[in-house]
Length: 603
Image (cartoon, rainbow, N blue to C red; front, side, top):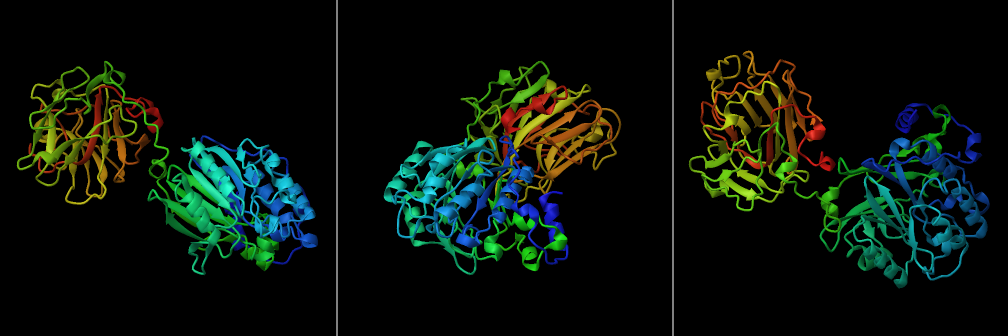
């Protein structure tokens, strides 16, 4: 049973008193930490103040052992990359307390990368990281941390360390800073960040912010010093984590670059059993651009649900706004200032054209014009060139060249259409272009890159992306919505659903595909693949759900122009496209997704 099912069982089961389970005193199993560096999702485990578990003769490391056992055995689904302790490992920092903590941490040595930093209870309240030797440094200093492959460096005094992890296809930096970092320590941290300027960084320390009763975090006096001396001017720091204070809390501050820095306080020593080794998991998801945070106690989670005491049952998981929450972070945009994405170079037309390519248009020619009458060359060599024309009353701004493009598109350029009802611009093949009459009886693939503006405002209902001009009735098709609509078109509905309408060469029917609502402000690659029997629409390499099973053999063209940027009705264009259109390719055979236009890293 996985943890999520266990939590549901924990909340549903009655609680009765028990004694501490015998397994609590057992060492963590010698499991190998499982981590997938290629997954776009990973987790950072955060362990705040454990001091009451290492408190002279009342010490009880069992909860922390359970936490480590959980991290090693039960959370492959969470893909935990790293564990960071936020300081105050022990209550008094004595040799016996530190030794017991050190032996407890031995369970994860060499199995799970981690960092530890000194809190005031570990080293005393009146000193900085220049304090010299301590039992803490002897046990948790660089000589221990460097055993892990994630260890990067430590300050000369040994109390500050840096760790580099590989997760979700990139590297990340974690700084573990002493509770009272000195000027020398700050200089070391600045130098380390400057030496790794492209790594997104997380600062962990013991004292940086405290929270009010509403859960709003505020910089402490020492936290303000860290902000002024390190965090504010280093844009790569996007998250800070600290303990020391309770209650937990969070806030968002703006750094010198005007970007968000998330400031979080986590400390549960005031909870039952000194927090019982409670951890936070920061689930980082680069696909959804989110960090989902949850807080729970593995020690209580592992107990028999029928035998938990009331305090154990209520402490399994914390669900308040400061303990369970999500952060919306556009990682590519947030990190662009110091680590812009490595985009592929433009690919020449010859790389994406073969003997099956019926037409291929791109808009990156040095002398490309978009005035009325300008020609966009068909790079397939088949002579299906497009000519620009604006709808009556539309000005120059109805169609402009743009550098904006899908990151995986062959050409690094696009056309910006500023269309609306009664306004717009079209690109059409000549009256004698071969494409006008092609029926594609052996199958086809139509591809286009498009982007809808954000905000998406105005009247843009049923705007066309591309179409074959003509009346379906002229092709002998009368079963559809209207004999005046064209025989083949890709359109955008009022709800931003893609609509692919086809009157096939054979039969009198019009199978129509519908996508989900397209998000605005981002590029999409749309591919319509027909294998000679039916059509399938793909968006960003994913097959949409609403593809009809009705036969779709060929396209019932009537010899009129192919049009980019609009769909006609009764041969008239009343609604211009609104947004960007990039590379557009028509292939006279069905392609597999791996053969689509986007660079393989952006499919």
